[in-house]
Length: 196
Image (cartoon, rainbow, N blue to C red; front, top):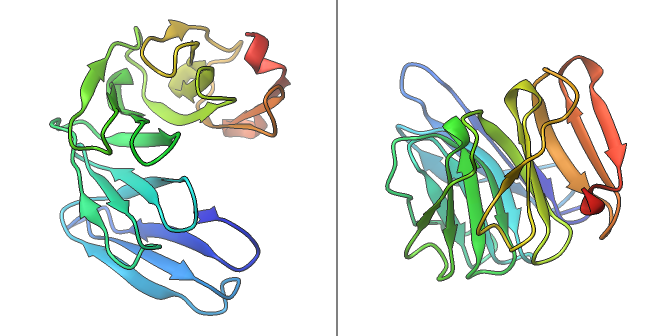
């Protein structure tokens, strides 16, 4: 789910079996009504990253990446060449972004998803969420308390596990300094993560 304000937002979801069918819906009235924007077969979508109300990306199974440049009216595929599931996505603008997921796999693009470069994260855990405090400094979290950080815009990543074995499924920053990480069984970390 992704909302820009109290009125405009997106949700994705679907069925794992038997067809792995998934959908994207958009609301412009705070969820009173929803309009179908994408009906995708043989795939599941997980997370959005928008740079503004018109331009954004969503990632999913089997290297699935889709982007929109018109507020979700149409979605163009720009798949990563992998069979891995992508669970996390972060774009700085429409050209530069990072996607991550199964087995700690990660890729970067500098041309809007036309080409993707593999990035070694040094972990094999699933990555569930990525967040950056600015164009250089970011964190990603995932299974078994895994955590990694980057100080060069996602080109390289360094291990920095959290003191838990719980599944961490989201990291967010309220500004350039303070962040929150949440996970299973009520796990919550709050810290000045930008200072590692």
